[in-house]
Length: 106
Image (cartoon, rainbow, N blue to C red; front, top):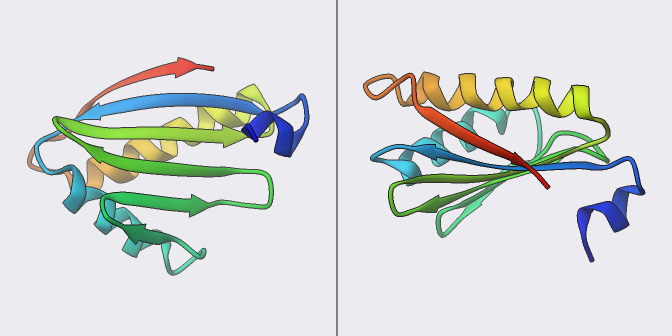
């Protein structure tokens, strides 16, 4: 099942990659930070972030950085949430920040 199947035709999916040296550490810190506001989880390098019933993101630690998948209800919101995600990762990656982010619409 794809995110579009779950959300209908209006779902906007983007994938991104943040180049960094400590991806697992930064994902864990974002999971902990956002865990006060939502039911985040972290297992084996994978962080999940359920922003709402229709919006969510995952961050996967990869060699050389963080692979990000973001699902939102529309394109404007997707662009906004990319910025939110970038700012939060950069906050915890302060010694490396600002990180380089590459995003692709799916």
